Length: 112
Length: 134
Image 1 (cartoon, rainbow over the protein chains, first blue to last red):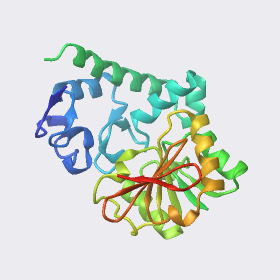
Image 2: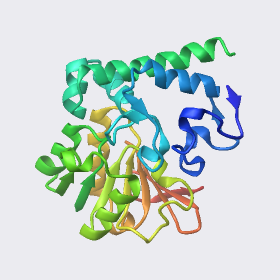
Image 3: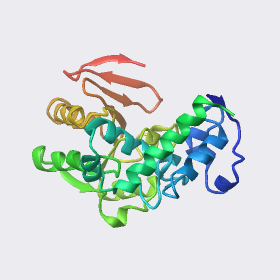
Image 4: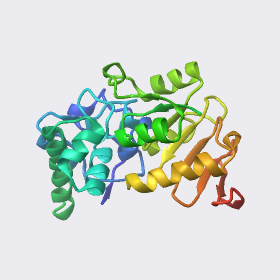
């Protein structure tokens, strides 16, 4: 874990409001900035961070649905079809969430 | 209770609240909800006098939605859908609704944690007795 004190990810500037983004708040335990950016890229454009939506956490593009909710539900149901049904999402959106989490984990295991 | 279900709450929980616990449920699965910000969700809840049901802890960030400025926010803290249902049965049958009105409440399977105006958290057990204050 690395603590960051400011956002300097070009793709997120003007998009993320630090006050409403717990993952990026000053002093918060967060992953490396590049890891975060890479993880969003790994999602194939299906994951985004928007200020004021889902508390500034990573979420599905165009939806009020955080990655956390998809991962919680998948871990609970242990079923892709059940997760799709519970959250009204498609398989690619679950896959994007898993890719996002995997990319973060990869960066955590081998920090830059 | 009048409830507004946030997008991160599983569909079966929304149906359980409506069909089994007989609450008046507005759920967020309709397409028009998809692009609402958190502030717009709370504004809608205020307009319709509904308590927001969510799994998003971000609602309780300090100063964001102050106590007594909204009908109430319930944050479901159990990952398991079955545990969430159990917690909601207890909430409906054991607790006085006025406890959770206009407050931010975290709902666990075995307790409620209700934030007060001064930022203190009151913990209530199964028999809705106050267990401790944090």
